[in-house]
Image (tube, helix red, strand yellow):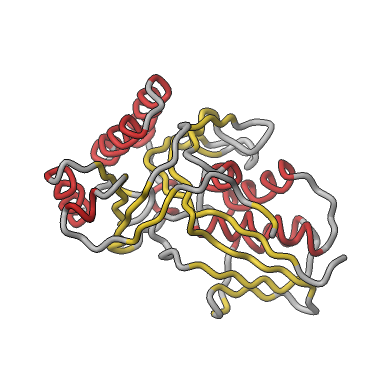
Length: 275
C-alpha cells in the first residue's frame, strides 16, 4: 500500500442522451454523445483513520464516492479539486467517482483493472442517481459516442475522430436526479433520433445539430439557454445545452463571436488516468 495516489478525470459535456434502466446498475446507463474536456477533476486518496471527502477544500458528502470507497473496502481521505462549475453539466460527480476508484486502487494496492474500476464507479453513480453515462465517457476520452448503455462488458462506445476547441458559459445548475428520475419518454425518443443521426454522420457538425435538436425536442431548454444558443446561431456558430445543466457550450468560437466572454478549453484526447 502506498501513502497517496492521484488521478485525473476529464470533464464531460453530454450533448444528448436516452435513459436505459436496469435493476443491475452495471447494465443501466445511457446512450448518447458528448465531449470530454481538457479541464477536469483531480482526485487524491490516502489512507486515514476515518473517512473524509473534500472538494475544493470544503467537506462534502457524495453518495457515489462513498459507494466506491465501500466497494474497495477503503477507509480514506479523498481530496478533489476542480475549476468546473458544479451541477452545471460537466460530469463532476462522475469525475469524483471515477477518480476515487482509480486513486484508491493505487493507494491501497487493490490490484483491479481499468474496466473493473470503471464498472465500480459507473455502478456507484447510477445507484447514487447522479449520472448514467459520464463515467464510461470520461474513462474513454475524446468525443465519445455511447452506443450501448452500461459499464464495460455491457456498454459499447465509439467516437468522433476529431479534436475541437470548446467554449462554454454556465448560467446556473439543474438537478440531474429530477430529470433522469421522472418520465423520460419524450427525452428518450429525442435521444434515439439524435444518436441515429450521429452514428450515420460522425462529425462535429452533425453532433452539434443533433444536440440542439435534442435539447429542443426533449423540452429541456430554459429561457436563458435558448436565448444564448439562438445568439450563437445568429453569429453563424454552433452551440447547444450541456446535459444536465443550465450551461451553453459551443464548438469553435461561437460564443465569442456572439459577444459572450466564455471559458475556452479543448477536447481531451485521453481518458482518465492515474498520475
